Length: 258
Image 1 (tube, helix red, strand yellow):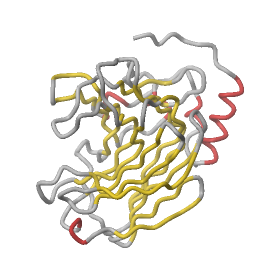
Image 2 (cartoon, rainbow, N blue to C red; image 1 turned 90 degrees about the vertical axis):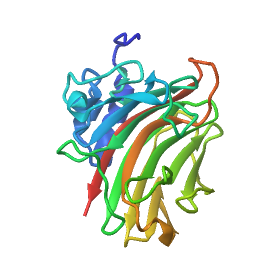
Image 3 (cartoon, helix red, strand yellow; image 1 turned 90 degrees about the horizontal axis):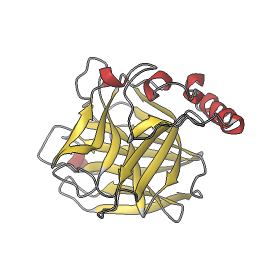
C-alpha cells in the first residue's frame, strides 16, 4: 500500500472543516495527519475489508480503529489532502457468503463492543457528509441491515450512488427479498453531499438527501427483526480488476438513538 503523505491542500482542508462544522461533527475530521479514528468516533463501528479468506472477510474491531494512531491501510485511510475518512473497495476482493461484491464498510457496534442490534421502535438516525471519488457502476454508501429475529440476511434499505450521479434508495419489499428502487437525488461525481437515514415511529423510513426529506413505510414483515447501520464503500460491481472499484470519502459520520 502507498500512503504517501501529500502536502495538505489548503482549499480542500478549509472545505472539509466547513463541512464538518455544518454537520455537527468534530473539527478534527479535517486533520490529514491523523488516522480515521483520530477524526471520527469509531467506538461504535467495526470495519469489514475486502481481504481475508473466501467467504470470510477480515474485520477490524472498534478498539483497533480508535485514536489518532488507529488502524488504517490501503482500503481504509485518511486522505492526506483533506482529512477525509476514505474507503476503497475494488471489483475483485473477498466477499461475504451472501454477496458477490467486495466492500470496505463500517458495521455499527455498541460501545461495550457488542454488535448493535436495535428494534424499529424509537428513533434511530445516521448522518453523513461524503463524496464519491470514483465508482465503476454504483456503490452502496449507507444501509440499515437486518439483525437478529429470523433467517433473513437482507438489508432493510440501501442508499446507492451511481456513476451517472444519481442517488438511489433501495428498500426491501420483505425479509425474503425483492428491492424497490427510487431516484432521490443527483450529485456530480466528486462533489460533496449529505444524507440522513432515519427510522421513526417503528414503521417509517425518513431519508434526507441534501436537505430534501422523503418518507417510506416499513412493511410489517420486518417488525420481528432488529436492525443496525452500515456505512462506507460497498461496491456493486465485480470483475477480475483490482484497480476498478469504488472509492468513497466521508467528512462526517454520526449515529444517534433515542
